[in-house]
Amino acid sequence: MKPIIKKSQIKDVNFGKDCKVVEPVNLYECNLGNNVFVGPFVEITKGATIGNNTRISSHSFVCELVSIGENCFIAHGVMFTNDLFKNGKLGGSLENWFSTIIGDNVLIGSNSTILPVNIVSGCVIGAGSVVTRDCKIKGVYAGNPAKLLRKLD
Amino acid sequence: MKPIIKKSQIKDVNFGKDCKVVEPVNLYECNLGNNVFVGPFVEITKGATIGNNTRISSHSFVCELVSIGENCFIAHGVMFTNDLFKNGKLGGSLENWFSTIIGDNVLIGSNSTILPVNIVSGCVIGAGSVVTRDCKIKGVYAGNPAKLLRKLD
Amino acid sequence: MKPIIKKSQIKDVNFGKDCKVVEPVNLYECNLGNNVFVGPFVEITKGATIGNNTRISSHSFVCELVSIGENCFIAHGVMFTNDLFKNGKLGGSLENWFSTIIGDNVLIGSNSTILPVNIVSGCVIGAGSVVTRDCKIKGVYAGNPAKLLRKLD
Image (tube, rainbow over all chains, first blue to last red; front, side, top):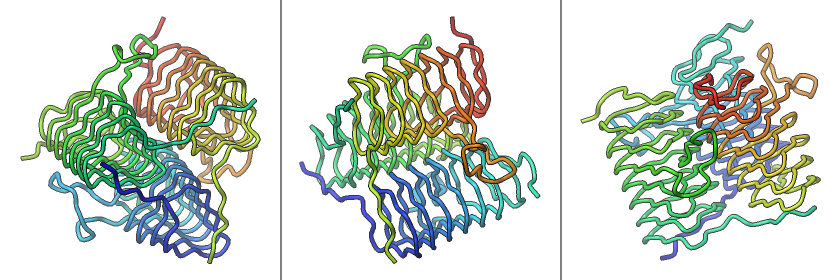
């Protein structure tokens, strides 16, 4: 049989000024500040918020309930999540999903996975990390699960 | 010199009814059940099988010899494999590749990597996991390598 | 406001003979040897070098200052990096980035993350690894961080 085919697109996105996007991307119903860069093969879904001057690099995925601050660098292949599969099941809808808040000047290395957490401003997340808990202290975190390696001034 | 250029496409795919695909994708010679969803930037190759009502989210890759059951959720950036690089070499062809069987109602978190294993029905694989061994008990698994964190009823 | 939209493309790439590329890809100002394969949803940026007969599989990202040898297999979703976020900041430009040299006949498993390192010829990097240090001995490495599991002859 024939499937229903949709195309990746930019739909109902609030862009600030001077944003730059490299297609193909799939962006819908999200909010991007000024001077945001979005690389190729990126998906940003409904309700996500990206602050001024932040870069979302190729192959990354940002979902609903994720808020990323200003001057952040999200490297390549970074996946955000909002469903903890509580009780072994899909959350299924908004009231069962969890939010992620990323501060300003946060750098997240390539292929990192970000569970629903808060990461304070100025943190660095090493490449390949799986962040399962809040990063409350400004510092460098890495590993699976990610741990604080050292504080930053 | 000029390369040979091919385009990602949907070619010789057996779709059940009510499937939905968000292009661009590269799908060929694979079998999808009814009501399967395939997100953008997904590749599913020859011989892979996806059961009814299963979702394959953006950025995921499903290869030959992988069979995924019904009502599964494969999150974003999940990579299946079939070559164990035995003796430090590429398998190169089918007789040197290994199969993966995923049961029904399995949830696999984003950025997980699935070596050739069996995962029984009802398992949950945490985001960012690397699954190197069979998951024989219905439960929650996570980590690199993934370990059983707790059983599920 | 309206963003500036660019399209993924193949621009100013030096291809050897018999290369094959599956679009969409974003390749620019890089050097590919003879008989190189590039899968869909791949980005290879300025200054990267790929040797003869090497395969770069879908969803992978190869950046500036990365040199990959001949007859290598880079599996799916492999991310190379060149910025160590020294002092918690982006390198920002070439003099603060670090190089990666991959020898010949190296196999890198899916979803691996490669920090700026040297990997000698003949090494195998297991799927889902995070390679943070040089791989100086020909062998099989895996884990986060990747460790030598066994030597190869």
